[in-house]
Length: 149
Image (cartoon, rainbow, N blue to C red; front, top):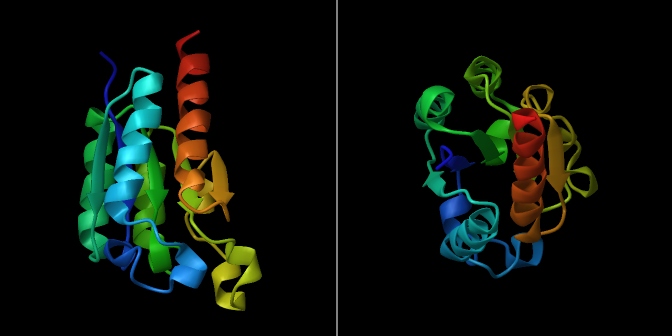
């Protein structure tokens, strides 16, 4: 059995379905977890799903992924636009990573157009709501399969 895929969610994502549904949709974080687990299962992966409003806890999970995960899918929320600490952790993780956003960050406020963490990820998926996570699973599973060869 391969190591799980870590799915990490940053600040305020615990409020999905309640906070700004016109931007983030009506799905809850539990809905995201279920859909990601189902999609990962189709590729033979389990998931470790985490959400934290604390930057240091996300860094701890990324560091843990170095030895315990096949790869990382991360929606760092607002930390995407501010956190060099998360960038450094992702660079040190030495596992493939995909950055995910529910909304299209390029249609939003100017400050959201820059991501500190993108350079540590092999891909960025944004603007497809919960489907963004499912597309990230597909991309990560494909990358992991290619790396086996």
